[in-house]
Amino acid sequence: MDYRVDELAEAAGISVQLVRSYQSKGLLRPPHHEGRIALYDGRHLERLREIQELKRRGYSLRVIAQLLESGPPRAEPGEGEIAELVEEETFDLRELADRSGVPTPMLRSLEASGLIRPRRVNSETRYTHADVRAVSIILTLVGGGLPLEELMKVARIQLDAAEDVAEGCVRLFMAHVRGPLQRMGLSQREQADRLVAALRLMLHSSAALLAYNFQRMVLNATQEELSEVGTRSERAALQREVLRRLELDVLAQ
Image (cartoon, rainbow, N blue to C red):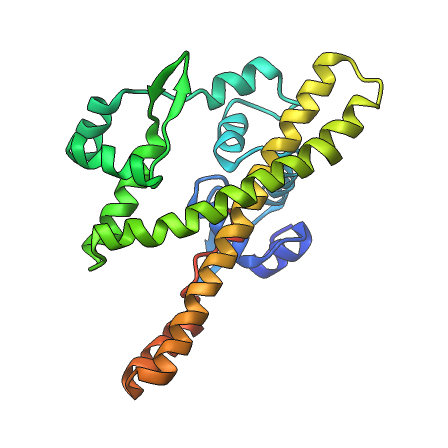
């Protein structure tokens, strides 16, 4: 049976935008075409259901992509397999400077401001590709016209609030997820596996929710500011962008 993209999305219980997002990330192979009409088949639908099931278990899209590439999904990927998939390369400050193209003194300033946060691995300060991406994002903001020093001051306010939110989330997690798991009479390994899966789900979901709220607040604040001091052309241009979905689709990640 063939499906148009809207029919496929409806059958899978997701949005058309999410179907296209999976396809752009390589999780879903391209459709075949009849003229200008893109058509999907039952294998596409099955793949979408596999992806949604793995997401329900708390796996990130990066891990899901690697699991799907490794063969037919099992009832639950093994602990060792997941550890192997998610293990990241780490490097020191000098290597971060080489990879990001940013001098080490500036990286130290970014770290002191809280804009980048290294990991502690065996009592050593280590960085990952996530830090390289974070530095790249900072450079994009600076390249867009934001002064670095002022950006660090504003970010510090947001980061302080984010730390409070993070600590609150952990308290809720320990009380309402770990606590009940400890009382379920599970083996230590099963309890630990469920704990990590639940933490993974909370981490991705809460990060997406925070990003959504921050984007919405920035967008609303910009609209309010331009409504008072902006020109008619500026307000019209922003409105056009809003209608084109200016916000990043973080909830689809």
